Length: 174
Image (tube, rainbow, N blue to C red):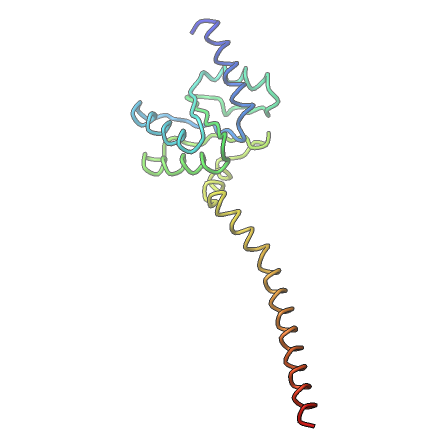
């Protein structure tokens, strides 16, 4: 790789870091080109991108950004998944892909909101439902107390109406 190509890679990597909500480091050992292409397409469909690069260049790009130090995670073959649209989507895609491909690729680390997350935490993220489902659950949880209160208030109005009708009948018969 020529010096200009290295500079272009570092610049593009930093630009991706700036746009991404999350990124995951993976070890792609054992995956052939066809599998990697399939993985890249699946990630692209979920709003993410998979980049393979030299560890030294990735370290250089990380040093020049405000990301945490990843220490020994940048050893061996390293692929970086950038999640642009969603935090959970890329983790789900990688986890599902690994189930079908002898547990490859393997998570090394992740960085979410400039904090390092471990592979077990990434697995927990992958188990979360999609964003839309979480928002629907939140809306339901917020709506439930209001619906209950509206029902209680309506019951009191009906009770008052029944009492007024009974009073009206009592006075009408007297």
